[in-house]
Structures are given as structure tokens and as C-alpha cells.
Image 1 (cartoon, rainbow, N blue to C red):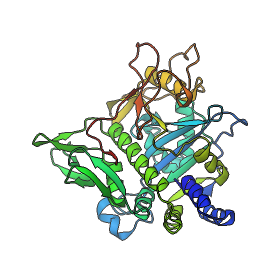
Image 2: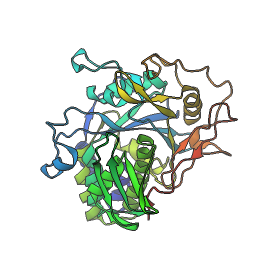
Image 3: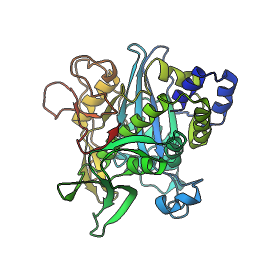
Length: 395
């Protein structure tokens, strides 16, 4: 989003020195685990959505919990952007936050079990998350970007809201314990196209117990975190559509100023690099970005509770297609519900076209759509669209 705003500011007369000034306001840190790609080779950027409440405005405590009540930080969202310079395109792979793995890079003082949900890796910072992904899935990460809870909220408010079309009234209500409570605060009372403010957009993005009202009663989305990832992609698409349609320099300046403090990154990522993502690879175009979700299934762990277990056969095929090559060997493969390592199957013997530049059977790329691999044993690895009809979309 920052890269897109930089592009727009340049287009309306923003100076290079001003852009450098804004870029310098973003917090940066070294990343020893990040892998520098060879010139012209594909590379991967990790996007992390943090649930840290640090710096939370007092008005948001009721909705999200105070920093004292919800301590530490976890990765609420994990997306890998794969950039292919040869084809000039990009695609994304979302990793469900409850995926059961062996954590890497955790100091002894963290008191975190090594067998844990992947979102716990962020407790030791972004580099521990980078290391866990590389060692679990064999996907080398070159850069990372972290956005906190309030980055999306501030951006949407600065843009004057985003327009989303809800097929049905919707809410986020958790009744799994027998006692129902509103989870993220999402409460859409009317169907149709409407403008969401920052708090509503954030609530929609965080909804894990999404319900919609049709035929006289409330229906529940059974996919939990998977459905949440799909709705996040739809919100991102709506935000990008709104930002691209805004050419008011004062509004764009206000937007940029409101979000720079909500982001952090590795210090190897330059503004020129992000401008290239936006202009050449269309990595920030909601309508052109092919999106995948790591194939998993729910399970119960005696240590970590509700977890997502990787379907290693389908995931191997999908990751190979996503990267356009066989992933690196995994030193700590994903875990089953009992905490036992699940070795990856033998590499696919024939090359599989990269998702971002494939022809023929290709991932859905309209309106932030997501894709999954075909079932194990089926022919090929052609993904299929998975956006349910009850989810809202940009309007």
C-alpha cells in the first residue's frame, strides 16, 4: 500500500526528497535470515499482520483488548508475495495462522513450546517468523513487511472509507463454547453496497466466526481462518481500488502520513524496490494478483489445542507451482496433531509452471480471489476458485 501511495504521489507532483523523508519514518531492522536473490531471479516478500496492541489508542481498547490484557505479539496474518521478474508478475500464498509447526529462532526466555502454531513465532520478532517459514516450507524469504492492527484502520479512514457490497447482513459471533459473544465487532445490519470506515474494515478482516443472515436465520461460515484469509484479500482489493481512484494530493499525503508509523520492514527493502513491485510486477493490484492458500485441515493438539495440519502432498504441489520450482529442503517439516514431524513427499519430477506466469489452468485473480490445490491423486495442480457467494466484495 505504501508503494502504491508513493507511485500516486509521484504522479501528482510529489518530490523524490519528500518520498525519501516519508520512507525514513518507517521503522527498519536487519534480517540475517533473509536470502538475497540473484539478479533477475524470483524472490519472496513476507507480509506479516501483527496483533500487537502496543501503541493502541484508548478508543480501541474495548474492541481489541488492552496491551496489558493481551500481551506480546502474534502474526494475525501471514502472506508471501512471490515476484517473478521473468514474467513481470506476482502472486501470494497465505499461511493459516494456526498451522502447526516447529518454531525457529525462539530464545529460551520466550517460554514458547517449540511445537506451536506458526503465529507464535512472531513473539520473537519478524526474523523468527522468516526463519520458521524457511525451515518448515523451504521457501526463501528476501524481505519482510509488518503492519500492525491499526495500519489498515488508519489507511481506510484516511481514504474516507471503502465500498463493500454485502449480499446479506453479516456479523462475527463465536458460539463455540456454548456462550455466544461478538468476536471482532463486525455488525452489518443491511445488505447491499455500503461505505465501511476503518474500524468496520478491520473488523471484517479479523472475522473468524463470520455469519450471514439469509432465509430467516443466521448461517455460519464453517471455514474459520481460511474464510478470514479470503475476506482479508477482498478488503485489500477494495482498499487498493479506493487508493488508485484517489488523486487528491492532500488526501494522499494525509494517508501516507497516517500509516508510516503502522509499518516496519527489513532494512534491505528500498523505496525503489517497492515502486518496482507496484509498477512492473503489479504486486499491489487487487484485481490482478493471483492468491493461494496453503492446504490444511483442522486437528486437535494436546499441547496447542485447535490447530491446522498441513496436507503435505497437496502443499508440496501447490508450493512448487507457486514458486515455479521445487522448494528447498525443509529441516523442520510441519507437524501432525500429535506433534510429530510429517516429512515432505518426494519432489514433483516434472517442472510445474509458476502461479504468477502460468497458462491454461490458472489461479483466480479477480477481486482478490483465492485458490487451493486440487485433491491429492487428481491430475495436475490446477487451483480452483474458493470465494463463497456470501462474502462481500468491492463495489
